[in-house]
Length: 186
Image (cartoon, rainbow, N blue to C red; front, side, top):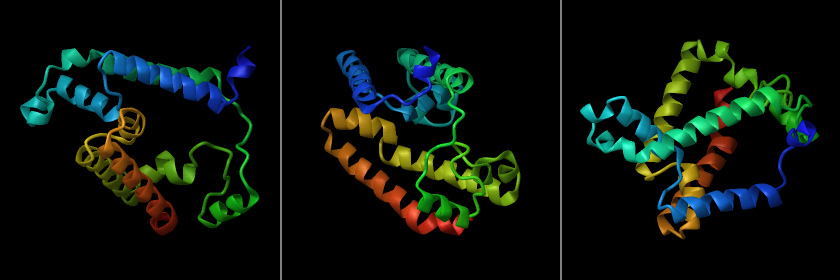
């Protein structure tokens, strides 16, 4: 039974599950987005003392906390009990390109240690990358009025034009980062 769960869900299962969750959220008048969860956590932690953005009734957003706890526990269950130890199947050309960038074992880990290992973040260069990346993600999510998941899943399902513009911007930013900027970080 657990062997079946170790394989990725096909699109025809995952898609309808996401659609069902979105329908339920819309039905109950809720908007999905991870940046909303972070806002709730900051409000709980006293962020309202420093910014009006965090000054709201966070108790009305308790479902955000339940969502985050579910995501954390789901991630824990998936990594501890449902992980598949086989390396990812990558195109041979991609493997060579990634090796040229300095990743020695592409496909063996979900996130390569050369990019995300603790020894990388414990250097000044790695720490600055982490801080700059965190700032840009936080600024971008706030400036866009929500995060990628909120706009792409919730906003587009509500047929919101600003979400379409934001999602196009997210994709363009990702393409620019991947093709033009990422090689300079190695």
